[in-house]
Amino acid sequence: MPEPIIHVDRLTKKFKNFMAVDHISFDVPAGQIFAFLGPNGAGKSTTIKMITTLLHPSSGTIRLNGVDPVKDPKDARRSFGIVFQDPSLDDELTAWENLEFHGVLYGVPKELRRTRIGEMLAFVELSDRRDDLVKTFSGGMKRRLEIARGLLHHPKVLFLDEPTLGLDPQTRNHMWSYLHELNRKEGITVFFSTHYMEEAERNAQRIAVIDHGKIVTSGTSDDLKAQTHTATLEDAFLALTGTTIRDEAGSAADRMRQRHRAWGHR
Image (cartoon, rainbow, N blue to C red):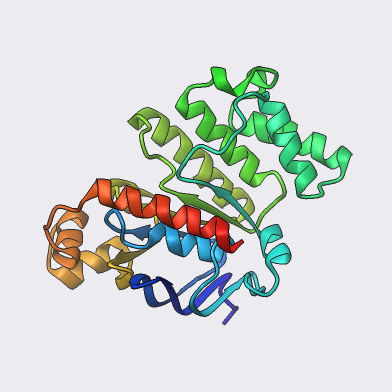
């Protein structure tokens, strides 16, 4: 049996007295579309940050494409692209310049870089806006450009942290059509976090439900419904995580504190 492209074993992240991620373990096979489904503040973003070298784990092990991201962050970064939850493009640069800057940072040779930028802009249907400043783009266009940027260096895995947050349904569907095409054509592994039930059910081949920093269960959408004897994924999710309303403001504040701490540990 081939080694999974992502292997996580008893991964933990603690911020003083707060256990953000609590001894989680899971594998993601190469070529799978995998969803992390959980409420706000469940530990989804913290886990992604540890796998993608932005946070150091408190304990546990990670293997990404055969590399330990903690010991060999440079090698690990060559294996993945990432679309962050918060916008991360430079609004004062053009679409082309944003991709060019990324390609230079990743050491993509000039001729290959220029060819790849053209291909990626065409792939996300932004060729006609290549020379426009990103500050003139809509939210959906920026998301598409972030996907193009994340794919520029031919990664094995694309991480997307709440990629469609705030996007309208048409833009969301359009974005996922790109990702499914990419998964079919190039076999890229897609790892995304979400709290949208429909997004997980429609797009993920396997779903891990995470809550309070722990993985509650994992499987296909049908597996989760069978485990909880429910008719819909939303009902299964509520059965697994409870019906208590989460404090979104508190979760946002926690994310901000974690982000500052993460930069301090880089």
